[in-house]
Image 1 (cartoon, protein in one colour):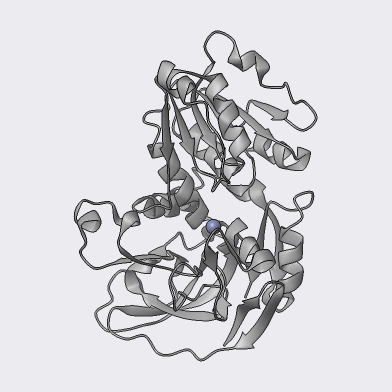
Image 2 (cartoon, helix red, strand yellow; image 1 turned 30 degrees about the horizontal axis):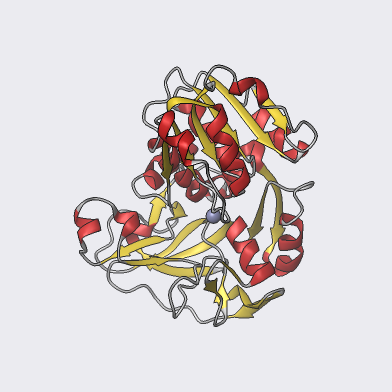
Length: 343
Ligand SMILES: [Zn+2]
């Protein structure tokens, strides 16, 4: 069984790994597609982000789909041959957050392809994997594997929009139109937003944003004052989703969001100075959002039925043996939105 293993920055190798048989409550999945995410790229280029460092060889990947190859005892949610998306999130134990239904905040969280814990939790870019049965989430039998592999990032975005309350009739701003920004546009449209404006510094990314439902797109590199008209009055947007991870963008949102509006911070930003007085006097809500929980199952249903159609985001599929080329391609925003490894 081959796997895509990161040893250190820019040292990505396809290596043999052993695979066991599934025990009770477990399933073995033949992985078919794995989406390369921004965090995988951070591991590839910098061996980590923030204080998180890769300290031992780690199989990358947390956005994947496949088909069930074998099931252990006491498994009833899937059958052999079934097509599934793999939920990389495994909250363990019975801490107060799990008891409160806030499973994404579990004290003991195993998340595939993450170096936050040591030993690291190995990832999903591999030909086969044994996981807990509940991590295998069925999709429709005819859902293409690349679309099914988008359940994880879509779940992130569905969780993000639940942070903002009802979007029905709302004017929404999405800053940053990479995969997460574009999926947030799709999710906000699904949730009833009547007008969506999107910003980025990449014209190809903005073209995809437009194709998935942004009414207006603004390239803030070539039109730095492109959002100025939305600052009129006391601001024009009911809700803003910050998906660029750029702290300076967050500061600018305080000018264009209406009084009592909500800013949901999705991107993992750098450090930034914010004018607190704007938050106070406009009674703004600034909320974080992290990962997902029940939203993974919503994503599997919405993608299976194409009620959320992720196809415009899929820019390339590359065989796993060319993983390095795939990571280089995924790093080039002029060419790529979502690149999938295929196994
Ligand atoms: Zn991801």
